[in-house]
Image 1 (cartoon, rainbow, N blue to C red):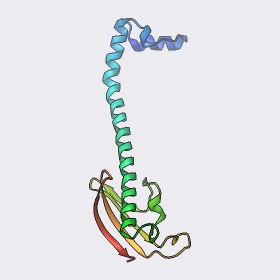
Image 2 (image 1 turned 90 degrees about the vertical axis):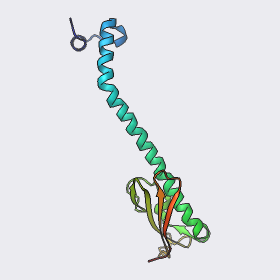
Image 3 (image 1 turned 90 degrees about the horizontal axis):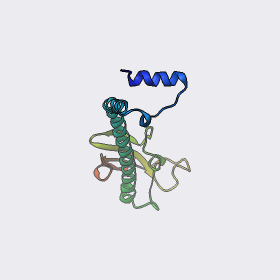
Image 4 (image 1 turned 180 degrees about the horizontal axis):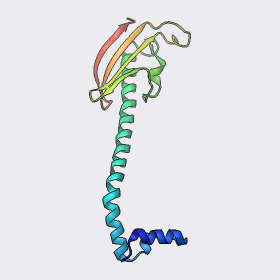
Length: 149
C-alpha cells in the first residue's frame, strides 16, 4: 500500500497538484488522523498562547490606565497634577513606570508634578507607587503618593 507521504512526494516531484479532498477516503482518513494527532496539539497550544498574550496586553493597559487615573484623582485632577509621560505610553515592555509584573499584579512607580513640568524641564514634586491587580481592574494598594523622596 502506498503511503500518503510517498504519494504527496510523488505528486510534488512530478508537478501534480492535489488536495486532501481529492484523495481516496482511506488516504483522507489516514491523513486526518495523523494530522489531528500531531498538529492539533501544536495549533491549540499556539492559539492558547496568543489568547493569553492578548489578555495580558489588555490587562497591562487597563492597569496603567487605572494607576494613572487613581493618582491623578488623589492629587486633585489634571488641572493640578500631571503624571510622568511614561504613564500615558503603552504599558508594554520597556515602560520605565512599570517596575514589576507578576501573578500578584502590576507595580507602577512614577513621578508627577504641576501640569507641564516635564515639557518645561522642571523637577517633579510628587512620587507615586501603586499596585494594581493582575487583571488590571482594581487597585490593590497605593503604596506611596506624596512629596518626592
